[in-house]
Length: 206
Picture 1 (cartoon, rainbow, N blue to C red):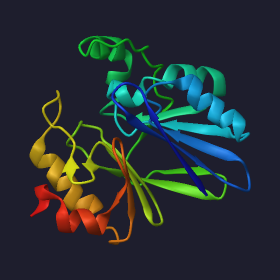
Picture 2 (cartoon, rainbow, N blue to C red; picture 1 turned 30 degrees about the horizontal axis):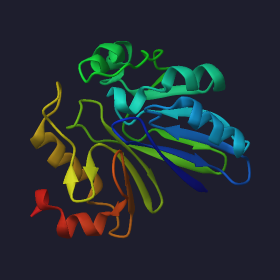
Picture 3 (tube, helix red, strand yellow; picture 1 turned 45 degrees about the vertical axis):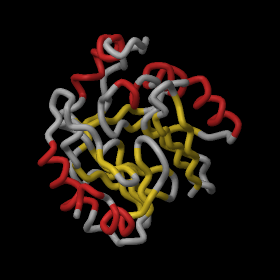
């Protein structure tokens, strides 16, 4: 499997392209902005996108949904609790002085234990609410794509509508910190880290 990270948009969100070497199929996680750049990367590698997956519904992680879905025809997936945000991205972004296109509705809702297959690989969904009501992480052997739930040395904000600090802390402890220490953590912003490092050094989990 190949993991390609693109840092997109003015808030520097991490978009991940996960692809199967053998089948040249891919999933795109959190196309927050710059959809044309994402599409160019897909075309360069001759990848066929089977799913666009949103770890949560905030505009800086889903702002490229519309263009990416229009061009690729891929299935759009998000947790049901965050799905209503997709129709209001323009309003959310305007509050930050930015312009974002509203997303089309989800084709399928994700829930705990769901699997997303691409080629010879399979992502497993685990629910990690707290940063938003429908936040999810996507798990592969040795890797976790965690959206804005956990960062290197920090955690996601919980002062947005639907956020809850205690819920987020519980999500990290019960859903992420149970993973092997050497699991590589790919967050929604900033550098990658590991579960072991965050358990030991993250100041929110003394």
